[in-house]
Length: 127
Image (cartoon, rainbow, N blue to C red; front, side, top):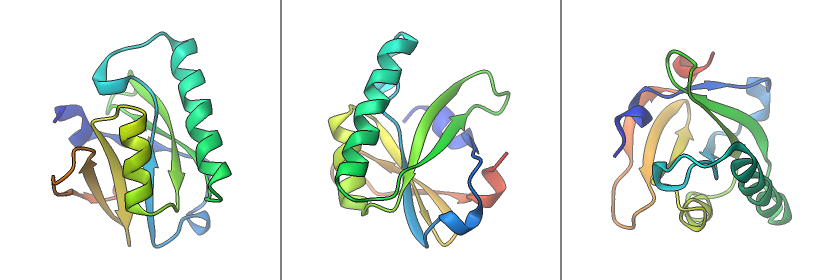
């Protein structure tokens, strides 16, 4: 697992009221940690957003960022199930997604059979 996942912070304009008790953060940017051109990343994220919305789930913008803010990946916070969110993560070739359950933030590897890794409070990771 890329060590950067363990240090990720999040930027969002949404209020806490828009989050459910259990949700997930997914991106389509940089599949398997391979840096793609910005235009390709944006197109991939647009497709992911369309799939989330067409499936009838909430889709709020959130950006995963490095601690120094130099690396940023636009993402989506959704109330889709873990199973559905992982399916999107796999479809868009992601190593992992983030899970939030009652403020507990976890890294959830997209490979089947791997267990979530609890990394602390989601609230503490908000910028």
